[in-house]
Length: 310
Image (cartoon, rainbow, N blue to C red; front, side, top):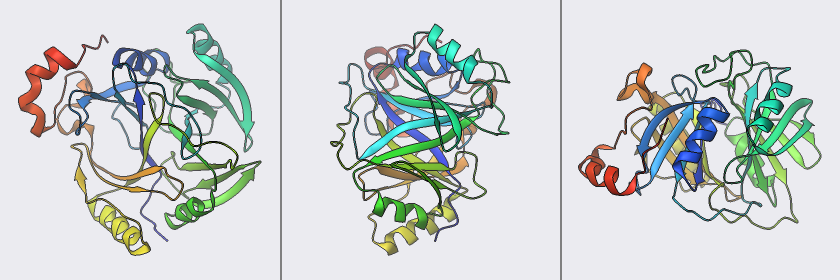
């Protein structure tokens, strides 16, 4: 069993428009845009990162906004609800705030004894705010006060036709199975980074998802450094998983592999962080380009990347 995984590092999804995506996370949810860069493999498309002040691992939601992308269809073989942790007793505040800002599909529920407020984003993305005891320091310059602000991720939920093999994978990655609520099984990394919960929803009668705007592209798990990442990579490959070589993503190093249920997993390092090319006070303000795409700056800024109003 692995001991290097600390919980979630980031969650990456697809969107259909950069401005509405930016507005939803910075103005509606009150997160900070910590990086404005581009997709490594499609540099004509933004890669936007939102999180706490420094973009701490376990707090960062990232998006590829493909202009005009067709909305995805939710189903099995994907991450369903991405959960954010908020302080206990704050759901009435969030209910009023989100309703007043026109956020769709608001519904309250209780799962595993935790109160939660579920809602959808601009592209039908599925989210929940979950009340939790969480001492992580929030970003408080996005219109939400310190007493109510999002602390970071709480959890991610995978929807699978058969959760058995993915459950065994999570256990191998260091997650403990701690509870079950209906068709959902909960897994937790002991002493994790706060974003250390994964739920598996087993839904054998639900059709497979079609990825598009509003779909989660992949979820990333945090390890401290490259040495621990290499240990994880070797252990996964020894177990039979096909794992990519280590890829430099400028703000972390990444490896990827596909799970038995079809969800794409990444293992990302906490180093070097989002302040490697910007000081913390100015994160996310300027367009930062990977070195291999810097020569494209003029054409990207004038032809492909729409300006984002802050």
